[in-house]
Amino acid sequence: MVDIEEDLAREVSPFRRFGREEWAALRSDTPMTLTEADLDEVRSLNDRIDLSEVETIYLPLSRLLNLYVQASQKLFNASNMFLHRTELKVPYIIGVAGSVAGGKSTTARILRRLLSRWPSTPKVDLVTTDGFLLPNAILERDGLMARKGFPESYDLPNILRFMSDIKSGERDVEAPLYSHLTYDVLHGKSQVIDQPDILIVEGINVLQTGRPPRDGRGIPNVSDFFDFSIFIDAEVDDLRAWYIERFFTLRNGAFKDPKSYFHRYASLTDAQAMETATRIWNTINLINLRENILPTRPRADLVLRKGADHKVRSVFLRKL
Image (cartoon, rainbow, N blue to C red; front, side, top):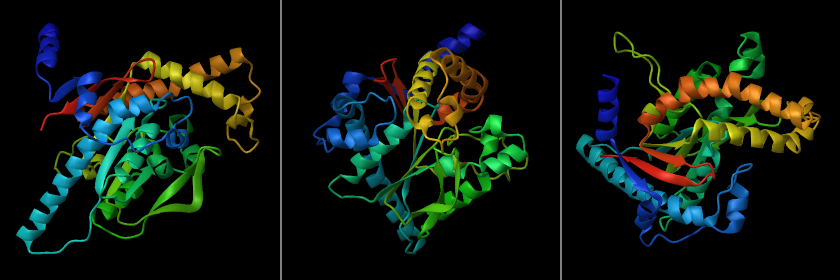
C-alpha cells in the first residue's frame, strides 16, 4: 500500500514543476527594476541572493503575479456588475510562508519592490505576522514562551479581524509592530495599511489551518483571505545549518546590544553558541517545522524549493 501511495504521489500532483532555466524563460521581456542597492536594503541576514537570482526566479514570479492581479481585478469588476453595486477597493493579498531561516522575509521584500515598480505603479504594502504574536507577558503567564512561533502563540482573533477589515476594503487598518531586538510586541505602536492594491502577508504559519468543525461553523483561517500563497521550501538539514549560521552572526552583532532580549548569548564561546543554537533548533524550531509548517506546504499556490546554496532549484506552480 505504501509503494502504491508513493507512486501515486509522483504521478498525480496539483502542481507543475519547473526547473531553473525553464522558469527563467517565463520572464519574457519583464525589465529588471532592482539594483544592488535595493538588494542590500531587503536582503535578510546571511541571505546570499544576488541580482542573477532575481532575474532567474523573481522576475518571472512578479510577471505571473501581475497577470493574476489583473485577472482578479477583472473578476472583481464583473462581480460588482452582476451585483449592481460599487465596492471599495479591495487589495489582492499574497501570503508568504516557510520555516525560520528559510528566506521568506527576503522573498516578501523583493516581491514588494518588484510589484510596486510595474508600469501601473500599484501601491504594495507588507505586513509580517510577528506583530500578531501575543506579548511576552502573556506567553510567560500561560507557559508558552518555549512555544513562541507555534500557532497557539498568536493573537488569532486580532489577525483575523485585521484580514477581514483589509478584505472588506476598510481604510487605515492597523497592524501591530514587533521588535526583534526586544523579542516582543511593541506596545501602542502599529503600522497603518490604507487600501493598497496589493498586500503581502509574511509569516511562518500563515497557511495554518484548524481542525474542521463538525457543524461547519468554524472560524476562518488566515489563508482564507489570500488570493495567492507562496511557500519557501528547503531540506531540513539546510534550514538547520542556515539557522545556526544566523545565530552566530547575531551573537557577533545584534546580541551585543544590551537592549537585546538575547544579550546573554553575546558572550558565548563558539562551542557554547553551537550547543545553544542546536538545542533551540531541535527543541523549538524543528518541532514547529514538522508539526505546523511543513504540513501546510501542499496548500500553497507556488513553492520555491531552495538548495543548500540558497538558490531556488525548482518552482512548483499549482495547476489552475
